[in-house]
Length: 155
Length: 297
Ligand code: FES
Ligand code: FES
Image 1: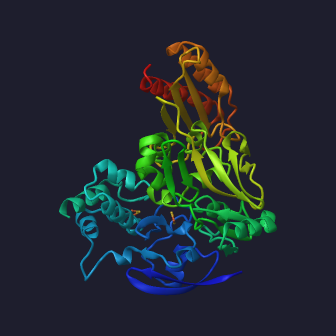
Image 2: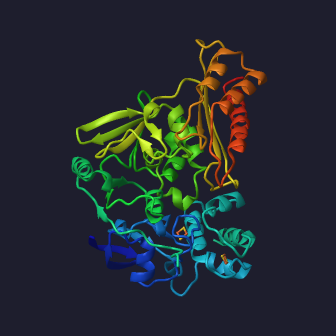
């Protein structure tokens, strides 16, 4: 089966990888690049734990082929903090208690970052709609939603 | 032990340089090759072992595949690779075909919709597609590139069975176009899922209505039902009742019952056949009432 040499930008840095055709973006991130912030929950586009930004838009990385990312720009949860400063969303989720086991958190942060990038002042309903694809088994969502709203307010 | 999160089975990813090259590759490989767009359906079915293609052909980079073009005479043409979030955000679609955006908003989650496409959903022949009903009632026409070059396919005779369509090996849908909808029209998509957002449809009802002086009732309705038949279903008997009788509550109930009696849904994890039938009646009544109020009833 074919392998492909690809190059892409990951969290602002140029990266290259050699990937077989059927490798998903999620597998490449976790198993090839060994950047394990992005989680594998269902590998079926249901849970959102694998959410990353592909050219600025959130996608389920379990349903994207690594080879499709040739020449593209990726951001994972590892790319949210800058200069030792947490993203305001990370800070707010910590303070408000939006993290329990933390498995959903990387995907939640990416979806919420994308929401605030396209809509800096979301309503509660906007936040709920943006996070439909991010399942959390711990928090009951209330504090996640509060955290996203708080981060938007502070920005 | 069962691997709880298996990867995809091995296949070759192919990215042809041109449409003719892609059509020839697909035709030469018959059942072992398949074009894909966002992959949201394809990869899940491959992972679960329902599809075993040896070649997946990426077709979303060809010219026009990502374009949305509106013309006040000819209507809307949307490239096959336009994702559902772009449909939802498009000013042209919201101004002239809001039913498409309304249906797209009910699909799965934001991150899935950044990859999912209306055309991909149609090509996979799913009877459950949320946006397919809107495409049917808006008289969508598919632009197909096959081994003999481009042609068009109406959606009216496109679906043959679950996962089966008139598409042949080598066929690639490049766009879908819609004529201008009738003057004074309104539309509605009502979806019943197990939760308010994000689920597949247990039942989906699309209704489009418009004033028409040639109809006894003074208006015509086009209806489409999702998840209740082997293919996206047009309840013609209900449409006829709505064209031939003065529209009032009784007529709408009669049409909704005709829609219910015309379908023989299956029972599955999402709902029993009987429940689905009753929900076809209730949602049809609601959708037609909503549209009727909007078009001046
Ligand atoms: S791992 Fe991708 S959506 Fe669950
Ligand atoms: S914090 Fe545990 S799944 Fe969300």
